[in-house]
Amino acid sequence: MKLRVVVADDEALARKELRRLLAKGHPEVEIVGEAKDGDEAVTLIQKEVPDLVFLDIRMPGRDGFGVLDALEPPMPEIVFSTAYDQFAVDAVRRGALDYLLKPIAPEDLANAVKRAHERKAVRSPAGEDGKGKLGPGDRAYFRDGKAAFLIEIGKVKWLEAEGNYTRVVMDGAKPLVRRPLKYFEERLDPAHFFRANRKQIVGLGVVKGTRPVDGGMIELDLGDGAKVEVSRRQTRAFREAFRL
Figure 1 (cartoon, rainbow, N blue to C red):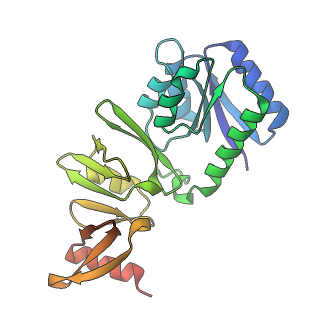
Figure 2: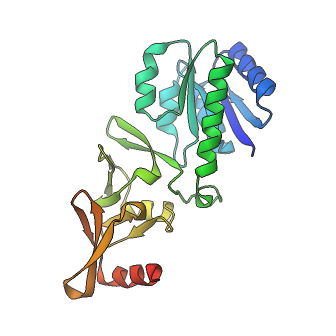
């Protein structure tokens, strides 16, 4: 299984060395492009839609974190490569797959490539069919004001409309995203997410059970005391979809 890779680094020697290491030990990796600054990286990533990006943090103009801010889902896996270890905590918080210090050790590179392969293997087909559908194995970048979250879609419990914004509920975080709920309905794989009512979309992977409520409707038990009531119309759809 080929792993499509973009290398973004302002130092030509660093790009050359990474290309050498990948060519030497990882024939399954295909480098689809190189970028020498952040703006060029954003353009290249949007054009090539790679599986993995090796991204320098300190670059002219837009830095590595600025590249993340500019990308839209579905997101590639990100491996930061830098000579500075003070950015490690922020990189982890932003959901980076790995953080490699220069000069990059071959064994560290091998571990990062292996993890990227594992992530690609579990991605749902819907996330890779070119239609923009996101499944549990995909990742997306959410912004809430100045905070940023790069998360696995499978960790989303439910999404709830708040005007023209959407509250994305996960364990330990509830970012308010500047997108309407309709946007997420169109982007999420319906095999894994269900539109329960006018205001809420539920991740089917967290549904623990159902119970009937007044009016012939049902209520979904999402665990930890969280419950979502399904509209009458969607109750019929739910029963038809999941009837044994």
